[in-house]
Image (cartoon, rainbow, N blue to C red; front, side, top):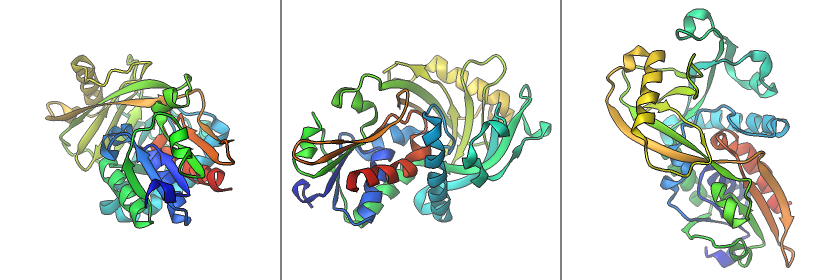
Length: 320
């Protein structure tokens, strides 16, 4: 299927773009996905991918996106080997039940954590079992699912959104940080995140929280390939190179949470740039000639978490 025979062109090959393309293709639309980078080299590929809202607004809209996405991920977790999605228990520290939204009514086993379930120095938190996603496996799954629905994936950088608009009646802009120049939208900015992957000494549960005396959020996410340790959130930083001092600090903080991590062999350093914005932009605007452009970007650190809910809304806007 060439670009000229598409009903919709989705621009952006990260989790937001792929999910949106899948929803559109499975609804019967002829969909082409254009991506500047290989799917496995997008920002999404290095995401920690724990299902929990992080650095995303507006709260009023995020709740429904979360509820719809949670149901989708729980379905995908029934075939974890193929999808990379598992439902894993863990602790979200420094978080109160009454401060969470209605979406949590769907979360398995959500309750206040008992003191013995919290690491030293943490006095409060909640326990829950939520989706945890192995992103390299999951992105390959989404790409295959899109193709099975008749969609195409094309490595094709876009200089301006008029290019896809010239070959399809509807365009969905899922370019993340690229929207800063492509739209252009200078409110989109990077929040640099660095993580360290180490061999797993036997950790089966995740942990997220800010430790006493630490400025950054600390998290441990057990993945099939090792334990992903994080992290950092540096506003406005475009540097994709790993920083050894930051990596050492991450490992030290995570070892405070789980002492068994001491001496764990480092497998990989990863750096990604979260596409932050004061609020998600999810809206349709008319194109010259009667076409439609839908923006779906600015998801910050929660792109994976809200991907399905946002994709369904973007698909409605593109075809309604």
